[in-house]
Length: 124
Image (cartoon, rainbow, N blue to C red):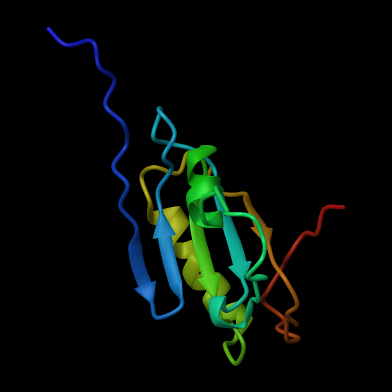
């Protein structure tokens, strides 16, 4: 009889061209949800003389910490509310998310339009 603990699968789902969903990669395989807005990888400059990078990409890093992650890249030109709604709907529908009414959002520069039906709580 093997005493090995089965690791959660390392599979992500592409929701659209710029959006992926990664379930938690921690041992329980369940956790809270987080949405991260990332810059376009083509527009992020890394110095050629910088040390070798050993950290995983942000979606993988957060998933290994136990979060279900929706990562959104290259969001210029996207309607932030629409892509955020897609992200939250995906997290709420994922059986690996254990908190369905609160999500973390990490992002860069973006502006929300003045939608009357959109409610966000910003925690400082």
